[in-house]
Length: 271
Image 1 (cartoon, rainbow, N blue to C red):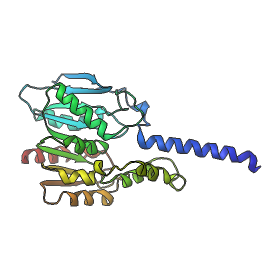
Image 2 (cartoon, rainbow, N blue to C red):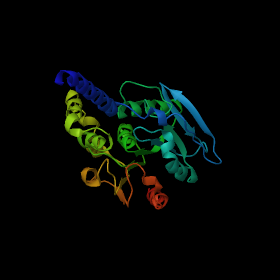
Image 3 (cartoon, helix red, strand yellow):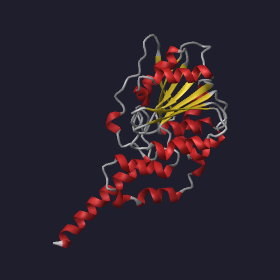
Image 4 (cartoon, one colour):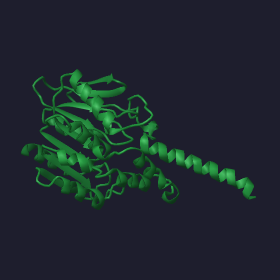
């Protein structure tokens, strides 16, 4: 009996390993990405592509300042629609970019925040966009910090920011339907293959030189508040920081809170 079941068990385990490994480096939610629309009343939304990345621009006037918005892992730019409306109401121009392998962007073998930030920078250069605010959600908040490097921003808005990659991978195991005790070695292996310290928020936060609005959901199960938010705040000591622990908010749904628009507007008014 064992000789019959052994290859079956090993085959199942191999499928689990491949699924888990892929989910840590790429978007597994392909079916919920491409079919979306970005529309805002009274504005013209233009869709374009550069280096395989799809992006949308909303240009309200030639004189308006620009906000760049980065969405969360497994989603697309429409995830930032509620945030966009607040900026539109204030007269900003917007740039929304689908991450590699997300939304309408081209599939790539490995998705990284660095690639997301680099191509977005080239999109800004192509259109002579000089962003004053970078606004990111979860994976997008990591990208916002990478996008910040080498430029002078007026502000950063960071929602559901992971503090470090090890705890970020732990968070994946909380939401993936996979037994951690069988697969715990996969993120450990990934982190040992390359030194990612220069790209982690707990490193890049030290180089922040503009006001920051740091938000985290009180009921974030993927990235528990106590494992990430206090550590990020500590890295921002001595800097101009506005924090908000969003009551009862789960991961990546902070903008649905009824006080969200008021809180974001208060931060923007303080700049």
